[in-house]
Amino acid sequence: GNSVTQMEGPVTLSEEAFLTINCTYTATGYPSLFWYVQYPGEGLQLLLKATKADDKGSNKGFEATYRKETTSFHLEKGSVQVSDSAVYFCALISYYGNNRLAFGKGNQVVVIP
Amino acid sequence: DAGVTQSPTHLIKTRGQQVTLRCSPKSGHDTVSWYQQALGQGPQFIFQYYEEEERQRGNFPDRFSGHQYPNYSSELNVNALLLGDSALYLCASSLNTGTENTEAFFGQGTRLTVV
Image 1 (cartoon, chains in turn blue, orange):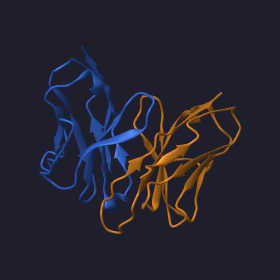
Image 2 (cartoon, helix red, strand yellow; image 1 turned 90 degrees about the horizontal axis):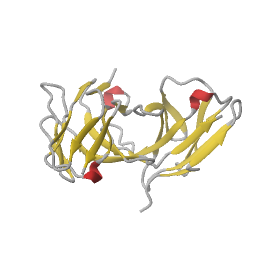
Image 3 (cartoon, chains in turn red, cyan; image 1 turned 90 degrees about the vertical axis):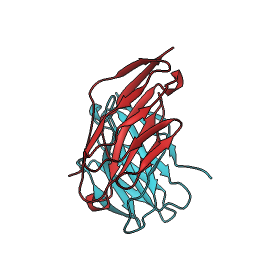
């Protein structure tokens, strides 16, 4: 079945530091890949997406590239702000996997001023 | 354009009771999926409704049931509540294209606490 694996543990970094969150996946067929962000007490917001291999999704300074050869979709941001503090979820959906979203466990990101 | 709306936002119930959560999908969407997000975990798929029928179901007991109305809105019902049902319940809407992977839009969720 479809599954997503995110790196373990929270991420704590200083303002203006470089952020990377690793995400790898296993999927049937040709999945679309997503990063969702969840701020405290809120639902999920789509941050960016990529629908085919080698696509780069980008939004608000965040980027992720769909790497089919390594089955990865790592999230990066060059200079984080305190307002980026949130939980980030990697997810995939595949029509051939019954078209339901499969999520990773999420990573808490804390940005210190 | 209203996005996905869920009600209520917060709910406290007693163990053994029943609860109904509601969701209105984004305009133009016809498919509603429900997810359970326990504290500190990623969302887990409960089920999906399309054309007023349950099309897919995740690994949840029959105590979890749902409904979709002709206007595409949906309800999630949970019977015989357990303490472990305490979670954030998320509704996601999408458009069924029949062949393509479709993007889901999420509501703000309903925080259910079972005491």
